[in-house]
Image (cartoon, rainbow over all chains, first blue to last red):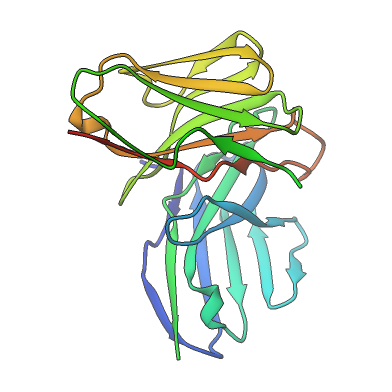
Length: 110
Length: 116
């Protein structure tokens, strides 16, 4: 069983829609959580870290639920430029080797 | 601006050839990583290095070796390329672990390797 699991999608949404992705992790010792974004034929880049209390960055909101071992990413008012693959990344305490999910594909259409 | 560069964006090699993929970072990072990315399989760690001359196997090291003679440079070597090593290869670097969520991996643009 993969340590970090994501629904691969694709999620196909119209501009302006709100869309949410979940990611579950199996290692209860996981300490740090992140969302990366990967555009087609490009490298992954950090989108945002996920803090215990939840955090927001513009149209993006990240949440962490330690009890159920999942993190989520909510995108409000989707833009065409949000089309990408979103990678869930988990880091266990004391480790510098992150575990990547396989990614969730988002397609925002006009 | 942080920078991770890879020696080639596209590479075509023949089966049995020795292949060198070079990665250079200019951020003075301690950690460097080599991944391959294939459709449906996501990012898979091949090798990583946490210091000069130090290396550790990742999840799929078979058929690969690495070299880190200088802090800024991490090389991936395919001793005898095979068709199943056709893939996108991504190099990344990161600082030593910091407190809390102050951790980020920076990726190079990738090398798309085709082995024929």
